[in-house]
Amino acid sequence: MKPGRKKQNPYLIAGMAMTGSAAGLGLLGAFWTPFGTTAMSAAERFQAPSLRHLFGTDNFGRDLFSRVMQGMGTTICISLLVVLFSAFFGILLGALTGYFGGVFDEAVMRVIDAVNGFPSILLALVMISLLGNGRQNLILSLGIVFTPSYVRIVRSEYVKLRDADYIMRARLMGVGKLRILFVHILPNVLPVLGVSLVIGLNNAILAESGMSYLGIGVQPPDASLGNMLSDAQGFLQSAPWYALIPGLAIVWIVLGFSLFGEGLRRLGE
Amino acid sequence: MRYLGKKLITLIMTLFLVSAAVFLAFQIIPGDVVTSILGTEATPEMEAKLREELGLTEPPVKQYFHWIGGILRGDLGVSYRYSRNMNEMMPVAELIGDKLPVTLWLAAFSFVLILLISLPLGVIWAKSANPALDAVLGVLTQASMAIPSFFLGILVTYLFGIVLHFFVPGGYVSYEKDFPAFLGYLFFPALSVAIPKIAMTARFLRNSMLTQMGADYVRTAYGKGCTRRRVMYGHVLRNALMPVVTFLGMIVAEIVAGSIVIEQVFGLPGIGRLLVSSVNNRDFPVVEILILYITFVVILVYFLVDILYRVIDPRISEK
Image (cartoon, rainbow over all chains, first blue to last red; front, side, top):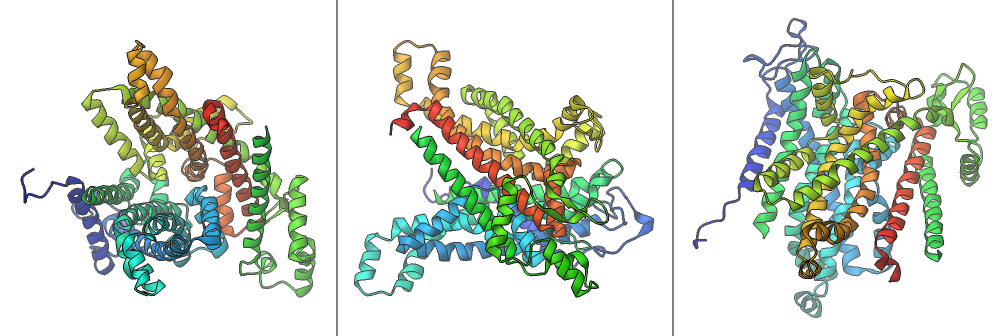
Protein backbone atom coordinates (compact mmCIF):
# COMPACT_ATOMS: atom_id res chain seq x y z
CA MET A 1 0.00 0.00 0.00
CA LYS A 2 1.12 3.51 -0.73
CA PRO A 3 2.30 5.39 2.32
CA GLY A 4 -0.03 8.09 3.52
CA ARG A 5 -3.07 6.43 1.99
CA LYS A 6 -5.63 5.15 4.45
CA LYS A 7 -6.76 1.56 4.16
CA GLN A 8 -10.31 1.26 2.90
CA ASN A 9 -12.75 0.06 5.51
CA PRO A 10 -16.11 -0.57 3.83
CA TYR A 11 -17.49 -2.26 6.95
CA LEU A 12 -17.02 0.85 9.01
CA ILE A 13 -18.53 3.13 6.37
CA ALA A 14 -21.56 0.93 5.70
CA GLY A 15 -22.09 0.34 9.41
CA MET A 16 -21.87 4.01 10.22
CA ALA A 17 -24.25 4.92 7.42
CA MET A 18 -26.84 2.35 8.53
CA THR A 19 -26.67 3.03 12.26
CA GLY A 20 -26.36 6.77 11.66
CA SER A 21 -29.51 6.89 9.57
CA ALA A 22 -31.43 4.82 12.13
CA ALA A 23 -30.22 6.88 15.08
CA GLY A 24 -30.90 10.11 13.17
CA LEU A 25 -34.47 9.08 12.35
CA GLY A 26 -35.00 7.95 15.92
CA LEU A 27 -33.63 11.17 17.33
CA LEU A 28 -35.73 13.23 14.95
CA GLY A 29 -38.75 11.12 15.91
CA ALA A 30 -38.40 12.24 19.50
CA PHE A 31 -39.15 15.83 18.42
CA TRP A 32 -41.02 15.66 15.16
CA THR A 33 -42.91 13.01 13.20
CA PRO A 34 -44.91 13.56 10.02
CA PHE A 35 -48.08 12.36 11.80
CA GLY A 36 -48.91 11.89 15.46
CA THR A 37 -47.62 8.50 16.65
CA THR A 38 -50.87 7.70 18.43
CA ALA A 39 -53.21 9.68 16.21
CA MET A 40 -55.84 7.28 14.93
CA SER A 41 -57.83 7.73 11.79
CA ALA A 42 -60.64 5.31 10.97
CA ALA A 43 -60.75 6.48 7.36
CA GLU A 44 -57.13 5.55 6.71
CA ARG A 45 -56.88 2.05 8.17
CA PHE A 46 -54.58 -0.43 6.41
CA GLN A 47 -53.29 1.95 3.77
CA ALA A 48 -50.52 0.38 1.69
CA PRO A 49 -47.30 2.40 1.51
CA SER A 50 -47.82 5.53 -0.56
CA LEU A 51 -46.40 9.03 -0.89
CA ARG A 52 -48.67 10.30 1.88
CA HIS A 53 -47.87 7.41 4.22
CA LEU A 54 -44.38 6.22 3.25
CA PHE A 55 -44.69 2.97 5.21
CA GLY A 56 -48.48 2.71 5.08
CA THR A 57 -50.83 2.72 8.06
CA ASP A 58 -51.83 0.16 10.69
CA ASN A 59 -55.13 -1.25 11.97
CA PHE A 60 -55.94 2.03 13.76
CA GLY A 61 -54.97 4.18 10.80
CA ARG A 62 -51.79 5.35 12.52
CA ASP A 63 -48.92 6.38 10.26
CA LEU A 64 -46.31 3.63 10.33
CA PHE A 65 -43.41 5.83 9.27
CA SER A 66 -43.98 8.01 12.33
CA ARG A 67 -44.29 4.99 14.57
CA VAL A 68 -41.17 3.37 13.15
CA MET A 69 -39.30 6.63 13.81
CA GLN A 70 -40.47 6.64 17.41
CA GLY A 71 -39.89 2.91 17.76
CA MET A 72 -36.33 3.14 16.47
CA GLY A 73 -35.64 5.92 18.95
CA THR A 74 -37.11 3.93 21.83
CA THR A 75 -35.25 0.76 20.91
CA ILE A 76 -31.89 2.48 20.44
CA CYS A 77 -32.31 4.59 23.58
CA ILE A 78 -33.20 1.61 25.79
CA SER A 79 -30.35 -0.44 24.33
CA LEU A 80 -27.87 2.39 24.92
CA LEU A 81 -28.94 2.67 28.55
CA VAL A 82 -28.68 -1.10 28.96
CA VAL A 83 -25.17 -1.12 27.54
CA LEU A 84 -24.11 1.87 29.68
CA PHE A 85 -25.45 0.19 32.78
CA SER A 86 -23.81 -3.16 32.11
CA ALA A 87 -20.53 -1.62 30.92
CA PHE A 88 -20.31 0.54 34.06
CA PHE A 89 -20.78 -2.38 36.43
CA GLY A 90 -18.76 -4.64 34.16
CA ILE A 91 -15.78 -2.27 34.33
CA LEU A 92 -16.13 -1.85 38.08
CA LEU A 93 -16.39 -5.56 38.87
CA GLY A 94 -13.92 -6.59 36.18
CA ALA A 95 -11.30 -4.12 37.41
CA LEU A 96 -11.63 -5.17 41.05
CA THR A 97 -11.66 -8.92 40.40
CA GLY A 98 -8.94 -8.79 37.75
CA TYR A 99 -6.55 -6.57 39.68
CA PHE A 100 -6.93 -7.97 43.18
CA GLY A 101 -7.89 -11.60 42.52
CA GLY A 102 -8.44 -13.71 45.62
CA VAL A 103 -11.64 -15.05 47.12
CA PHE A 104 -13.81 -12.20 45.86
CA ASP A 105 -12.61 -12.85 42.31
CA GLU A 106 -13.25 -16.57 42.67
CA ALA A 107 -16.78 -16.02 43.98
CA VAL A 108 -17.71 -13.48 41.31
CA MET A 109 -16.36 -15.65 38.53
CA ARG A 110 -18.30 -18.73 39.68
CA VAL A 111 -21.53 -16.74 39.70
CA ILE A 112 -20.74 -15.39 36.25
CA ASP A 113 -19.98 -18.87 34.90
CA ALA A 114 -23.34 -20.04 36.15
CA VAL A 115 -25.16 -17.05 34.67
CA ASN A 116 -23.39 -17.31 31.32
CA GLY A 117 -24.63 -20.84 30.79
CA PHE A 118 -28.17 -19.56 30.44
CA PRO A 119 -29.84 -17.95 27.48
CA SER A 120 -30.11 -14.22 28.11
CA ILE A 121 -33.79 -13.96 27.23
CA LEU A 122 -34.64 -16.50 29.91
CA LEU A 123 -32.68 -14.60 32.56
CA ALA A 124 -34.31 -11.36 31.53
CA LEU A 125 -37.73 -13.01 31.84
CA VAL A 126 -36.87 -14.12 35.38
CA MET A 127 -35.70 -10.64 36.30
CA ILE A 128 -38.84 -9.07 34.86
CA SER A 129 -41.07 -11.45 36.75
CA LEU A 130 -39.26 -10.38 39.94
CA LEU A 131 -39.30 -6.66 39.22
CA GLY A 132 -42.52 -6.29 37.29
CA ASN A 133 -43.27 -4.91 33.83
CA GLY A 134 -42.26 -1.55 32.40
CA ARG A 135 -39.52 0.41 30.76
CA GLN A 136 -37.21 1.05 33.76
CA ASN A 137 -37.43 -2.55 34.86
CA LEU A 138 -36.66 -3.72 31.36
CA ILE A 139 -33.50 -1.60 31.30
CA LEU A 140 -32.51 -2.80 34.76
CA SER A 141 -33.11 -6.49 33.95
CA LEU A 142 -31.30 -6.44 30.63
CA GLY A 143 -28.51 -4.40 32.23
CA ILE A 144 -28.00 -7.03 34.90
CA VAL A 145 -28.22 -9.84 32.38
CA PHE A 146 -25.54 -8.31 30.14
CA THR A 147 -23.14 -7.29 32.92
CA PRO A 148 -21.30 -10.66 33.22
CA SER A 149 -19.97 -10.55 29.65
CA TYR A 150 -18.29 -7.19 30.35
CA VAL A 151 -16.92 -8.33 33.69
CA ARG A 152 -15.25 -11.18 31.90
CA ILE A 153 -13.70 -9.08 29.14
CA VAL A 154 -12.49 -6.32 31.48
CA ARG A 155 -11.19 -8.80 34.03
CA SER A 156 -9.02 -10.66 31.53
CA GLU A 157 -7.44 -7.37 30.42
CA TYR A 158 -6.72 -6.36 34.01
CA VAL A 159 -5.17 -9.75 34.73
CA LYS A 160 -2.92 -9.26 31.70
CA LEU A 161 -1.91 -5.71 32.63
CA ARG A 162 -1.63 -5.84 36.42
CA ASP A 163 1.97 -7.08 36.29
CA ALA A 164 3.06 -4.97 33.33
CA ASP A 165 6.27 -3.01 33.85
CA TYR A 166 4.66 0.41 33.81
CA ILE A 167 2.17 -0.63 36.46
CA MET A 168 4.98 -1.98 38.66
CA ARG A 169 6.76 1.33 38.33
CA ALA A 170 3.63 3.28 39.15
CA ARG A 171 3.20 1.11 42.22
CA LEU A 172 6.81 1.69 43.29
CA MET A 173 6.32 5.41 42.86
CA GLY A 174 3.52 5.20 45.37
CA VAL A 175 0.55 5.77 43.07
CA GLY A 176 -2.73 4.97 44.82
CA LYS A 177 -4.68 1.81 43.97
CA LEU A 178 -7.70 3.66 42.61
CA ARG A 179 -5.50 5.77 40.37
CA ILE A 180 -3.70 2.70 39.03
CA LEU A 181 -7.01 0.95 38.39
CA PHE A 182 -8.82 3.70 36.57
CA VAL A 183 -6.20 6.15 35.31
CA HIS A 184 -3.32 3.85 34.39
CA ILE A 185 -4.96 0.61 33.34
CA LEU A 186 -8.46 1.56 32.18
CA PRO A 187 -7.38 3.59 29.08
CA ASN A 188 -5.53 0.50 27.84
CA VAL A 189 -8.64 -1.61 28.20
CA LEU A 190 -10.84 0.77 26.21
CA PRO A 191 -9.96 -0.43 22.68
CA VAL A 192 -10.97 -4.00 23.50
CA LEU A 193 -14.02 -2.72 25.33
CA GLY A 194 -15.06 -0.53 22.40
CA VAL A 195 -15.67 -3.45 20.06
CA SER A 196 -17.56 -5.41 22.70
CA LEU A 197 -19.71 -2.37 23.45
CA VAL A 198 -20.91 -2.33 19.85
CA ILE A 199 -21.59 -6.07 19.92
CA GLY A 200 -23.34 -5.62 23.25
CA LEU A 201 -25.52 -2.90 21.76
CA ASN A 202 -26.53 -5.34 19.08
CA ASN A 203 -27.51 -7.99 21.60
CA ALA A 204 -29.36 -5.40 23.64
CA ILE A 205 -31.38 -4.33 20.60
CA LEU A 206 -32.30 -7.94 19.83
CA ALA A 207 -33.22 -8.54 23.46
CA GLU A 208 -35.25 -5.35 23.81
CA SER A 209 -37.26 -5.95 20.67
CA GLY A 210 -37.75 -9.59 21.67
CA MET A 211 -39.05 -8.65 25.10
CA SER A 212 -41.34 -5.98 23.66
CA TYR A 213 -42.57 -8.49 21.12
CA LEU A 214 -43.51 -10.81 23.98
CA GLY A 215 -45.41 -7.93 25.57
CA ILE A 216 -42.99 -7.61 28.45
CA GLY A 217 -41.00 -4.52 27.50
CA VAL A 218 -42.38 -1.23 26.17
CA GLN A 219 -46.14 -1.11 26.68
CA PRO A 220 -48.67 0.17 24.13
CA PRO A 221 -49.69 2.76 23.01
CA ASP A 222 -45.97 3.70 22.98
CA ALA A 223 -44.36 2.41 19.82
CA SER A 224 -41.45 0.02 19.94
CA LEU A 225 -40.36 -2.06 16.98
CA GLY A 226 -41.03 -5.23 18.96
CA ASN A 227 -44.57 -4.46 20.05
CA MET A 228 -45.47 -3.16 16.58
CA LEU A 229 -44.50 -6.54 15.17
CA SER A 230 -46.64 -8.39 17.64
CA ASP A 231 -49.63 -6.15 16.87
CA ALA A 232 -49.05 -6.59 13.17
CA GLN A 233 -48.90 -10.35 13.21
CA GLY A 234 -52.65 -10.83 13.09
CA PHE A 235 -52.87 -8.80 9.89
CA LEU A 236 -50.12 -10.59 7.98
CA GLN A 237 -52.50 -11.63 5.23
CA SER A 238 -54.33 -8.35 4.69
CA ALA A 239 -51.51 -5.90 5.47
CA PRO A 240 -48.12 -7.62 5.13
CA TRP A 241 -46.21 -4.30 5.14
CA TYR A 242 -47.42 -3.65 8.68
CA ALA A 243 -45.30 -6.56 9.99
CA LEU A 244 -42.51 -6.47 7.43
CA ILE A 245 -41.55 -2.83 7.94
CA PRO A 246 -40.86 -2.82 11.71
CA GLY A 247 -39.11 -6.17 11.30
CA LEU A 248 -36.88 -4.87 8.56
CA ALA A 249 -36.17 -1.81 10.70
CA ILE A 250 -34.81 -4.09 13.43
CA VAL A 251 -32.72 -6.02 10.92
CA TRP A 252 -31.42 -2.72 9.53
CA ILE A 253 -30.22 -1.56 12.94
CA VAL A 254 -28.76 -4.92 13.96
CA LEU A 255 -26.96 -5.39 10.66
CA GLY A 256 -25.69 -1.81 10.87
CA PHE A 257 -24.23 -2.32 14.30
CA SER A 258 -22.63 -5.65 13.43
CA LEU A 259 -20.98 -4.10 10.35
CA PHE A 260 -19.91 -1.17 12.50
CA GLY A 261 -18.42 -3.54 15.09
CA GLU A 262 -16.58 -5.50 12.41
CA GLY A 263 -15.26 -2.23 10.99
CA LEU A 264 -13.99 -1.15 14.40
CA ARG A 265 -12.31 -4.51 14.89
CA ARG A 266 -10.50 -4.21 11.56
CA LEU A 267 -9.53 -0.66 12.39
CA GLY A 268 -7.85 -1.92 15.54
CA GLU A 269 -5.80 -4.53 13.68
CA MET B 1 -16.58 -44.14 36.60
CA ARG B 2 -15.25 -42.11 39.51
CA TYR B 3 -15.37 -39.09 37.27
CA LEU B 4 -18.98 -39.80 36.48
CA GLY B 5 -19.87 -40.01 40.15
CA LYS B 6 -18.14 -36.74 40.88
CA LYS B 7 -19.95 -35.04 38.03
CA LEU B 8 -23.26 -36.43 39.19
CA ILE B 9 -22.75 -35.00 42.66
CA THR B 10 -21.92 -31.59 41.20
CA LEU B 11 -25.06 -31.85 39.09
CA ILE B 12 -27.25 -32.46 42.12
CA MET B 13 -25.51 -29.75 44.13
CA THR B 14 -26.04 -27.23 41.32
CA LEU B 15 -29.71 -28.07 41.08
CA PHE B 16 -30.07 -27.67 44.81
CA LEU B 17 -28.36 -24.28 44.74
CA VAL B 18 -30.42 -23.09 41.81
CA SER B 19 -33.65 -24.15 43.50
CA ALA B 20 -32.62 -22.30 46.65
CA ALA B 21 -31.70 -19.20 44.63
CA VAL B 22 -34.99 -19.27 42.74
CA PHE B 23 -36.95 -19.72 45.94
CA LEU B 24 -35.07 -16.95 47.70
CA ALA B 25 -35.48 -14.57 44.75
CA PHE B 26 -39.23 -15.01 44.79
CA GLN B 27 -39.33 -14.54 48.56
CA ILE B 28 -37.89 -11.06 48.50
CA ILE B 29 -40.06 -9.59 45.77
CA PRO B 30 -42.26 -6.76 46.92
CA GLY B 31 -46.01 -7.17 46.96
CA ASP B 32 -48.26 -9.53 48.85
CA VAL B 33 -49.45 -12.61 47.03
CA VAL B 34 -52.63 -12.88 49.05
CA THR B 35 -53.73 -9.36 48.23
CA SER B 36 -52.98 -9.90 44.57
CA ILE B 37 -55.15 -13.03 44.48
CA LEU B 38 -58.09 -11.79 46.52
CA GLY B 39 -57.93 -8.11 45.63
CA THR B 40 -58.02 -5.23 48.11
CA GLU B 41 -61.65 -5.84 49.00
CA ALA B 42 -61.03 -9.06 50.94
CA THR B 43 -61.66 -9.29 54.67
CA PRO B 44 -58.73 -10.04 57.04
CA GLU B 45 -60.31 -13.44 57.82
CA MET B 46 -60.34 -14.44 54.18
CA GLU B 47 -56.74 -13.33 53.82
CA ALA B 48 -55.66 -15.28 56.90
CA LYS B 49 -57.40 -18.39 55.63
CA LEU B 50 -55.73 -18.24 52.23
CA ARG B 51 -52.37 -17.53 53.84
CA GLU B 52 -52.81 -20.69 55.90
CA GLU B 53 -53.82 -22.72 52.84
CA LEU B 54 -50.81 -21.62 50.83
CA GLY B 55 -48.50 -22.38 53.77
CA LEU B 56 -47.30 -18.78 53.94
CA THR B 57 -47.48 -18.60 57.73
CA GLU B 58 -44.51 -20.94 58.13
CA PRO B 59 -40.92 -19.67 58.34
CA PRO B 60 -39.17 -19.38 54.94
CA VAL B 61 -36.71 -22.25 55.51
CA LYS B 62 -39.56 -24.60 56.34
CA GLN B 63 -41.48 -23.31 53.32
CA TYR B 64 -38.51 -24.06 51.10
CA PHE B 65 -38.17 -27.66 52.27
CA HIS B 66 -41.89 -28.09 51.98
CA TRP B 67 -41.74 -26.80 48.42
CA ILE B 68 -38.72 -28.87 47.34
CA GLY B 69 -40.11 -31.96 49.11
CA GLY B 70 -43.34 -31.49 47.20
CA ILE B 71 -41.48 -31.25 43.91
CA LEU B 72 -39.61 -34.48 44.62
CA ARG B 73 -42.91 -36.22 45.30
CA GLY B 74 -44.45 -34.76 42.15
CA ASP B 75 -46.49 -32.07 43.88
CA LEU B 76 -45.59 -28.83 42.14
CA GLY B 77 -47.90 -26.53 44.07
CA VAL B 78 -50.85 -24.52 42.80
CA SER B 79 -51.08 -21.64 40.37
CA TYR B 80 -52.11 -18.24 41.73
CA ARG B 81 -53.96 -17.29 38.56
CA TYR B 82 -55.57 -20.31 37.00
CA SER B 83 -58.29 -22.19 38.76
CA ARG B 84 -59.78 -25.57 38.03
CA ASN B 85 -63.20 -24.44 39.22
CA MET B 86 -64.67 -21.89 41.58
CA ASN B 87 -63.18 -23.29 44.77
CA GLU B 88 -60.06 -25.09 43.62
CA MET B 89 -56.84 -23.61 42.34
CA MET B 90 -55.16 -25.24 39.36
CA PRO B 91 -52.21 -27.50 40.30
CA VAL B 92 -49.07 -26.41 38.44
CA ALA B 93 -48.38 -30.00 37.39
CA GLU B 94 -51.69 -30.15 35.57
CA LEU B 95 -51.08 -26.78 33.98
CA ILE B 96 -47.69 -27.79 32.65
CA GLY B 97 -48.45 -31.42 31.85
CA ASP B 98 -49.97 -31.10 28.40
CA LYS B 99 -47.76 -28.15 27.38
CA LEU B 100 -44.43 -29.80 28.05
CA PRO B 101 -44.53 -32.30 25.15
CA VAL B 102 -45.20 -29.47 22.67
CA THR B 103 -42.04 -27.62 23.67
CA LEU B 104 -39.94 -30.78 23.90
CA TRP B 105 -41.00 -31.93 20.44
CA LEU B 106 -40.35 -28.49 19.03
CA ALA B 107 -36.87 -28.39 20.56
CA ALA B 108 -36.04 -31.95 19.45
CA PHE B 109 -37.32 -31.30 15.93
CA SER B 110 -35.20 -28.13 15.67
CA PHE B 111 -32.13 -29.92 16.94
CA VAL B 112 -32.52 -32.68 14.35
CA LEU B 113 -32.91 -30.07 11.61
CA ILE B 114 -29.79 -28.28 12.82
CA LEU B 115 -27.73 -31.49 12.76
CA LEU B 116 -29.07 -32.66 9.39
CA ILE B 117 -28.45 -29.36 7.62
CA SER B 118 -25.53 -27.65 9.33
CA LEU B 119 -23.04 -30.54 9.41
CA PRO B 120 -23.10 -31.36 5.68
CA LEU B 121 -23.26 -27.64 4.88
CA GLY B 122 -20.19 -26.92 7.02
CA VAL B 123 -18.21 -29.75 5.42
CA ILE B 124 -19.15 -28.73 1.88
CA TRP B 125 -18.31 -25.11 2.69
CA ALA B 126 -14.89 -26.03 4.10
CA LYS B 127 -14.03 -28.31 1.18
CA SER B 128 -15.18 -25.97 -1.54
CA ALA B 129 -12.61 -23.81 -3.22
CA ASN B 130 -15.31 -21.94 -5.11
CA PRO B 131 -15.22 -18.23 -4.17
CA ALA B 132 -18.79 -17.65 -5.38
CA LEU B 133 -20.19 -20.35 -3.08
CA ASP B 134 -18.05 -19.02 -0.27
CA ALA B 135 -19.43 -15.51 -0.73
CA VAL B 136 -23.05 -16.66 -1.00
CA LEU B 137 -22.83 -18.80 2.14
CA GLY B 138 -21.00 -16.03 3.96
CA VAL B 139 -23.70 -13.46 3.23
CA LEU B 140 -26.57 -15.90 3.86
CA THR B 141 -25.28 -17.00 7.25
CA GLN B 142 -24.46 -13.44 8.29
CA ALA B 143 -27.92 -12.25 7.31
CA SER B 144 -29.74 -15.07 9.08
CA MET B 145 -27.89 -14.25 12.27
CA ALA B 146 -28.97 -10.60 12.10
CA ILE B 147 -32.69 -11.46 11.89
CA PRO B 148 -34.33 -11.71 15.32
CA SER B 149 -36.05 -15.05 15.82
CA PHE B 150 -39.57 -13.65 16.12
CA PHE B 151 -39.24 -11.75 12.86
CA LEU B 152 -37.81 -14.83 11.20
CA GLY B 153 -40.87 -16.71 12.41
CA ILE B 154 -43.13 -14.06 10.91
CA LEU B 155 -41.21 -14.16 7.63
CA VAL B 156 -41.53 -17.95 7.51
CA THR B 157 -45.26 -17.65 8.22
CA TYR B 158 -45.65 -15.06 5.48
CA LEU B 159 -43.62 -16.89 2.86
CA PHE B 160 -44.63 -20.51 3.49
CA GLY B 161 -48.02 -19.95 5.05
CA ILE B 162 -49.59 -17.03 3.24
CA VAL B 163 -47.80 -16.78 -0.09
CA LEU B 164 -47.01 -20.45 -0.79
CA HIS B 165 -49.82 -22.06 1.26
CA PHE B 166 -47.58 -24.85 2.58
CA PHE B 167 -49.30 -24.70 5.96
CA VAL B 168 -52.19 -22.90 7.62
CA PRO B 169 -50.92 -20.29 10.10
CA GLY B 170 -52.59 -20.82 13.46
CA GLY B 171 -53.85 -24.26 12.36
CA TYR B 172 -52.21 -26.08 15.25
CA VAL B 173 -53.24 -29.71 15.75
CA SER B 174 -52.89 -31.26 19.21
CA TYR B 175 -50.39 -34.14 19.48
CA GLU B 176 -53.01 -36.19 21.27
CA LYS B 177 -55.44 -35.89 18.39
CA ASP B 178 -53.27 -36.46 15.34
CA PHE B 179 -49.57 -36.94 15.88
CA PRO B 180 -48.38 -36.83 12.23
CA ALA B 181 -50.37 -33.66 11.62
CA PHE B 182 -48.90 -32.22 14.82
CA LEU B 183 -45.36 -32.89 13.58
CA GLY B 184 -46.30 -31.48 10.21
CA TYR B 185 -47.41 -28.22 11.78
CA LEU B 186 -44.29 -28.19 13.93
CA PHE B 187 -41.98 -28.29 10.90
CA PHE B 188 -42.05 -24.55 10.16
CA PRO B 189 -41.72 -23.39 13.77
CA ALA B 190 -38.82 -25.81 14.17
CA LEU B 191 -37.26 -24.44 11.00
CA SER B 192 -37.58 -20.89 12.36
CA VAL B 193 -35.81 -21.88 15.56
CA ALA B 194 -33.18 -23.77 13.60
CA ILE B 195 -32.18 -21.34 10.82
CA PRO B 196 -29.93 -18.99 12.84
CA LYS B 197 -28.39 -21.93 14.68
CA ILE B 198 -27.75 -23.72 11.39
CA ALA B 199 -25.89 -20.65 10.20
CA MET B 200 -23.81 -20.47 13.36
CA THR B 201 -23.00 -24.17 13.46
CA ALA B 202 -22.09 -24.37 9.77
CA ARG B 203 -19.79 -21.35 10.12
CA PHE B 204 -18.24 -22.81 13.24
CA LEU B 205 -17.64 -26.23 11.68
CA ARG B 206 -16.17 -24.66 8.56
CA ASN B 207 -13.71 -22.54 10.55
CA SER B 208 -12.83 -25.50 12.74
CA MET B 209 -12.16 -27.66 9.67
CA LEU B 210 -10.11 -24.97 7.94
CA THR B 211 -7.90 -24.73 11.05
CA GLN B 212 -7.44 -28.49 11.14
CA MET B 213 -6.66 -28.69 7.41
CA GLY B 214 -3.51 -26.67 8.00
CA ALA B 215 -2.24 -29.03 10.72
CA ASP B 216 0.87 -31.14 10.37
CA TYR B 217 -0.93 -34.45 10.70
CA VAL B 218 -2.84 -33.66 7.52
CA ARG B 219 0.37 -33.29 5.56
CA THR B 220 1.62 -36.54 7.09
CA ALA B 221 -1.58 -38.34 6.15
CA TYR B 222 -1.30 -37.17 2.55
CA GLY B 223 2.37 -38.16 2.64
CA LYS B 224 1.43 -41.68 3.68
CA GLY B 225 -0.73 -41.82 0.57
CA CYS B 226 -4.17 -41.39 2.09
CA THR B 227 -6.88 -40.29 -0.31
CA ARG B 228 -8.39 -36.83 0.11
CA ARG B 229 -11.63 -38.46 1.10
CA ARG B 230 -9.98 -40.43 3.89
CA VAL B 231 -8.03 -37.44 5.16
CA MET B 232 -11.15 -35.30 5.18
CA TYR B 233 -13.57 -37.66 6.89
CA GLY B 234 -11.21 -39.88 8.89
CA HIS B 235 -8.82 -37.24 10.17
CA VAL B 236 -9.90 -33.64 9.70
CA LEU B 237 -13.63 -33.97 10.37
CA ARG B 238 -13.10 -36.05 13.49
CA ASN B 239 -10.80 -33.49 15.03
CA ALA B 240 -12.85 -30.57 13.80
CA LEU B 241 -16.01 -31.97 15.40
CA MET B 242 -14.64 -31.70 18.95
CA PRO B 243 -15.33 -28.02 19.52
CA VAL B 244 -18.54 -28.35 17.52
CA VAL B 245 -19.91 -30.81 20.08
CA THR B 246 -19.41 -28.26 22.86
CA PHE B 247 -20.97 -25.64 20.64
CA LEU B 248 -24.00 -27.83 19.97
CA GLY B 249 -24.40 -28.37 23.70
CA MET B 250 -24.53 -24.64 24.20
CA ILE B 251 -27.01 -24.37 21.36
CA VAL B 252 -29.48 -26.65 23.14
CA ALA B 253 -29.94 -23.98 25.80
CA GLU B 254 -30.48 -21.44 23.04
CA ILE B 255 -33.01 -23.66 21.31
CA VAL B 256 -35.06 -23.78 24.50
CA ALA B 257 -34.92 -19.98 24.69
CA GLY B 258 -35.69 -19.68 20.99
CA SER B 259 -38.76 -21.86 21.34
CA ILE B 260 -40.16 -19.53 24.01
CA VAL B 261 -40.38 -16.81 21.38
CA ILE B 262 -41.31 -19.01 18.43
CA GLU B 263 -44.21 -20.58 20.33
CA GLN B 264 -45.63 -17.09 20.60
CA VAL B 265 -45.26 -16.47 16.85
CA PHE B 266 -46.88 -19.70 15.73
CA GLY B 267 -49.46 -19.95 18.49
CA LEU B 268 -48.11 -23.21 19.91
CA PRO B 269 -49.47 -24.05 23.37
CA GLY B 270 -46.09 -24.92 24.92
CA ILE B 271 -44.38 -23.97 28.16
CA GLY B 272 -42.78 -20.92 26.55
CA ARG B 273 -46.13 -19.24 26.13
CA LEU B 274 -47.13 -20.31 29.62
CA LEU B 275 -43.91 -18.81 30.98
CA VAL B 276 -44.50 -15.49 29.23
CA SER B 277 -48.11 -15.24 30.38
CA SER B 278 -47.14 -16.27 33.93
CA VAL B 279 -44.44 -13.60 34.00
CA ASN B 280 -46.99 -11.04 32.84
CA ASN B 281 -49.54 -12.20 35.43
CA ARG B 282 -46.93 -12.57 38.17
CA ASP B 283 -48.00 -16.15 38.71
CA PHE B 284 -44.93 -17.06 40.74
CA PRO B 285 -45.44 -20.77 41.49
CA VAL B 286 -45.68 -21.45 37.77
CA VAL B 287 -42.66 -19.27 36.94
CA GLU B 288 -40.58 -20.94 39.66
CA ILE B 289 -41.34 -24.44 38.45
CA LEU B 290 -40.75 -23.58 34.80
CA ILE B 291 -37.41 -21.94 35.54
CA LEU B 292 -36.34 -24.88 37.66
CA TYR B 293 -37.39 -27.24 34.92
CA ILE B 294 -35.54 -25.39 32.16
CA THR B 295 -32.46 -25.15 34.39
CA PHE B 296 -32.64 -28.87 34.94
CA VAL B 297 -32.76 -29.55 31.20
CA VAL B 298 -29.88 -27.16 30.48
CA ILE B 299 -27.65 -28.61 33.20
CA LEU B 300 -28.47 -32.14 32.12
CA VAL B 301 -27.51 -31.34 28.54
CA TYR B 302 -24.17 -29.86 29.64
CA PHE B 303 -23.60 -33.02 31.66
CA LEU B 304 -24.32 -35.24 28.66
CA VAL B 305 -22.08 -33.15 26.40
CA ASP B 306 -19.29 -33.59 28.90
CA ILE B 307 -19.65 -37.36 28.74
CA LEU B 308 -20.02 -37.40 24.97
CA TYR B 309 -16.84 -35.40 24.72
CA ARG B 310 -14.94 -38.14 26.50
CA VAL B 311 -16.36 -40.75 24.20
CA ILE B 312 -15.29 -38.93 21.05
CA ASP B 313 -11.93 -37.81 22.36
CA PRO B 314 -10.22 -40.44 24.52
CA ARG B 315 -7.31 -38.05 25.10
CA ILE B 316 -9.36 -36.05 27.60
CA SER B 317 -9.92 -38.87 30.09
CA GLU B 318 -6.22 -39.73 30.13
CA LYS B 319 -5.32 -36.32 31.51
